[in-house]
Amino acid sequence: MMTESHLLLHGTCVSVGGAGVLILGAPGAGKSGLALRLIDEPGYGISGLLLRGELVADDQVVVTRVADRLMATAPASLRGKLEIRGLGIVSLATLPSVALALVVKLQDHLAIERLPDGRSFDILGLALPLVEIDASMASSPARIRAALNWLKLPPAARETVALRHG
Image (cartoon, rainbow, N blue to C red):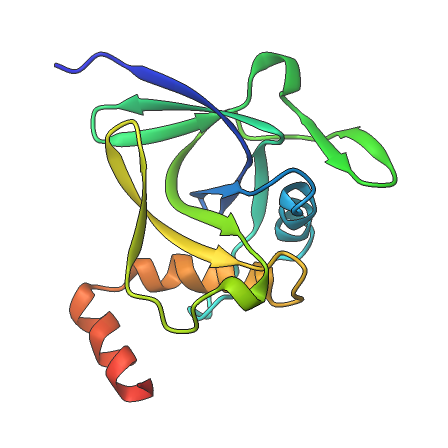
C-alpha cells in the first residue's frame, strides 16, 4: 500500500464537468482569468453536453497522490478565494477537492504546436495528459472542454477522428 505524497504547485485548479483541470503558467500568464472564464462561461466542447466550471484552488494547488489518482485541493489559507485582476481577491463557493484529469500549460499561441503528439506532465510519479493553451484567445475555455471530451474517447476513436481531419 502506497502512502500519500503531497506537492504544492503555483497554479490554479478548476473542476470542469467533474474533471480536474490544473492550469500552470508564469505569473501574470492568465491562470486566474482563464479559471474565471471557465466558471462564468459553461460550454459544450465537442461533446454536445454542457460542462460547467467550479473553482477548486487559485494561486496555489495542493496535489496529493492517492494510489493511482492525483487529487487537487486549495491550501486552507486560500480556500474559497479567486484573484480577479483589477477587482481584487473575491470569495466564492469552491469544491473541496477534485481528481485531476488534465494539465493545461499556458503559452503564447505562436509557441504552441498546431498538431502535437500526445503529451503528458508528470506529477508525483503519475502522468497526466498535457495541452498547451493561449489564455488570451477567446476560444481557450472551449479548447479545454474539447480536450476533456477528446480524452474520454477510446484511443481508436481518437485515431479515427484524427485521420478524417488529418
